[in-house]
Amino acid sequence: MDKKEFRLLIKYCFLKGRNTVEAKIWFDTDFSDTAPGKSTIKDWYAKFRHGEMNIEDGERSGRPKEVVTDESILKNRDILGCAWNNFHWLP
Image 1 (cartoon, rainbow, N blue to C red):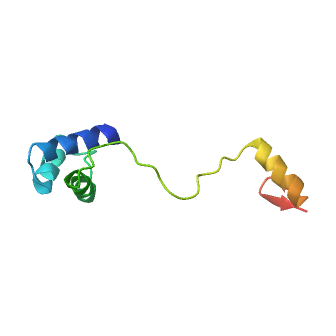
Image 2: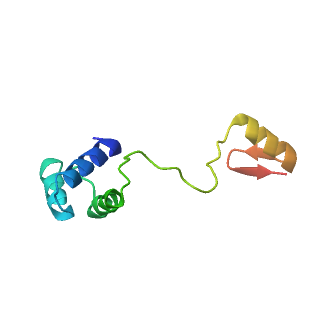
Image 3: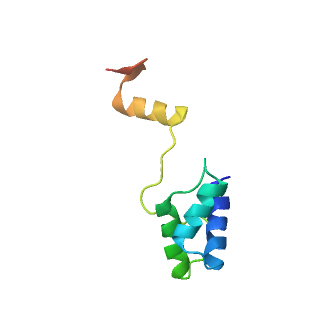
């Protein structure tokens, strides 16, 4: 199962009135090898208690990840005036 499916099941447990311990026991029994951790279940229960019923990933703050492409490598090489030689930059 993927994260989103587990989140849906955590929400199901929450709506059924199970506490986090009961939910964890149920997950460990039925999904022993891939069950979410206790802290994950607690975090989602806290969100549900505060009225956040969406199980999608939220927006993340901060700098987005950069993608390394051949174009960006060439651009940086031109700026630095260096060449890449297998393991390191050469002047």
